[in-house]
Length: 142
Image (tube, rainbow, N blue to C red; front, top):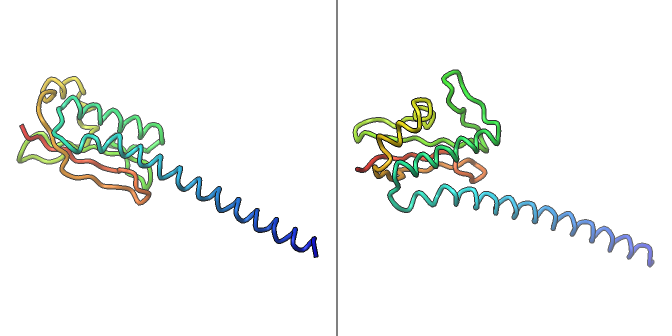
């Protein structure tokens, strides 16, 4: 009888240990995603300058390099399902949004000279299915 109770208690302890390990990993992943998103969402509350845009572009490029996000034949990052990050910027009121690679290819210093003091606002944010930010659009306002 004692053996049966010992086996049942052991099984319950193993199941609880597996559950708590799973719960810990899920909560850790959520915390990491929350911290990741906070690094970008801080720029959505107020108007930001062109210099801030270049900071965001550099963060996005670092993120894409960290996760080995692939590039296409136009040398732009291919969006994936979990880790890619894209920044799009519209610098003319009637213009279109250009990907961050267009500004880095032309030279980030040229962008800073032309738009460093200009004000931009975030017009949209998209998220991956895992909750991480995947895309942000910024538009010039001044």
